[in-house]
Image (cartoon, chains in turn orange, red):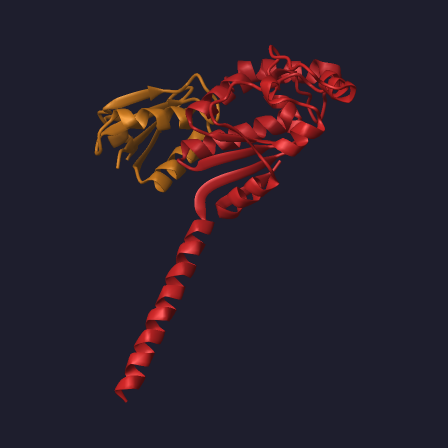
Length: 82
Length: 188
């Protein structure tokens, strides 16, 4: 799963590493309008809470949460737009 | 016999209409909406209210914040002044924090050292400042309602509040109506 995610080609990368909670969530919400349905968005976040916030947001709004990959000082979270 | 059948049909139709009305009322009572009664004027509590509001708005929940009593200090614009105040209103104006950046902490205020340290830490840890939070709130369409009665009580005037596009003025009834149809209500 993690290997697959690492090789995933994202249609849009949102770098939210410069903000703490709820910054990454806000960044994701703002950016989601820039991609088409079925496309993949990748969110970079250094905030641990984001790992629980993004899946809950996806669940609520209807996007498909694909999972996350941990890097040294941040995480990459993937989702497919509804 | 035929008469009886029509009667039951009519009865059924009436029951159905009643049910439909009830269902739509229940649905309206559980809107995807967050209503906050924000009473505290402490920096930490206003921060908490704003963070929860922003997170809710990011998750497509409609957010309505009702600013009342001490919380009104956070809506004051330090650059604005209001003329024609009586003595007590002027006193209140002088003694209460002038704007969101002058708020005190509910704990560890230490004569202003606490808020300074929190602001420093927030910056270091990349937490949005209160100014940025209000900016975001405005972009996300979060509605702010000012309690007319507490505004009047404390001698504040509309012209000394911040510029905010969705700023409304209303009474407790508006909050109760909003809260009544919201799936979430908070009192902070």
